[in-house]
Image 1: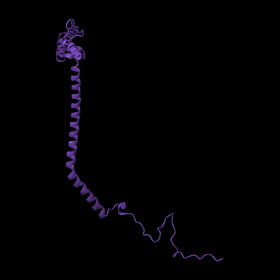
Image 2: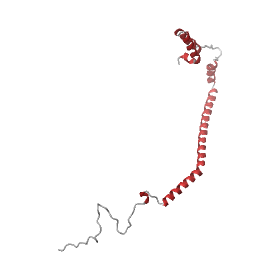
Image 3: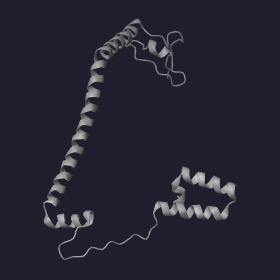
Image 4: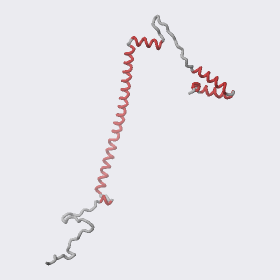
Length: 170
């Protein structure tokens, strides 16, 4: 048996070193594009400039229009709020008008607000047991007089005159 004749090394196709694949013979070899290497082609720079100039032109032309649109929309929203508040006010006034058309409501309001009574009835006024502001001030001044020397009394009365709410202890 004759061993298979081997080609000499110069004419043999190159082998695959470390799993490297070679492209098929009829196709051109693909190289890395210029953008991957960091360089830009003149065409891509022109495209970026054209897009930028179109965007700038749109901004200049549409900017004032959009500003007017936004301001008008906010004005419309404010007016709609105002209309809603006025409608609620009208509804409240209509409800109050309906209440005042009822005779029993009118009698009740005359009794509470004006202190009026029906013929033959007697009116009684109950005095409130809570002290008034003047009474509170006098009471506070008396406690100051008993607890402080004369100069302290002057100082505390000046503070009390400046802020009468101190009498109520707030």
